[in-house]
Image (cartoon, rainbow, N blue to C red; front, side, top):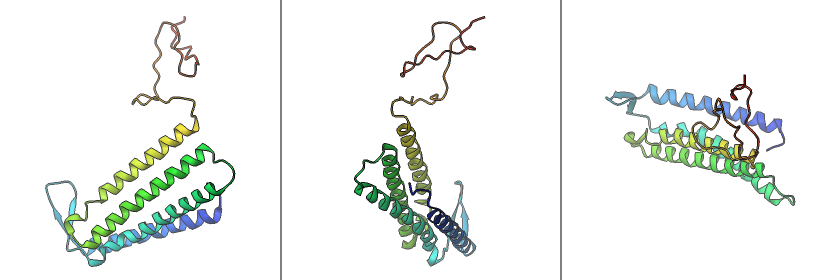
Length: 189
């Protein structure tokens, strides 16, 4: 998407490293100065957290907003070009905006909830962050997969990568008209 720009790559890797390190340091301070309460539920809940606990989300906000802004800038530049945008590039740009925008919204929601200071809500959006991250990543991968070969209809069952071949009978053909013959599964002796 960015013509393999090494400066951008090293800048983003540095930003990712610094934000990850800052998150770990913040989390260490927050957990070290808090008291855990164990419930019969999985996990634990923090009590007496510090007032600066919401700053844990600042590095993540910085990283996600940087990637969101880069995706918007690239989309605007691509839209202003006189040439048509390839379908795969369109899918990547669209899904990048959806992914980084969605992640930024969830991170901002976490930051606002933590800044409100309600200890009972500290874990409210953390699982939402993980779920949204997984869902949007899978969405992007599935869209890229379908854009890579638009003429092939991908099966949507859980066995989409498994093809069973019978021991006898005529060979089946798929949507492309190709024959699914196999030396092993035909039953020839």
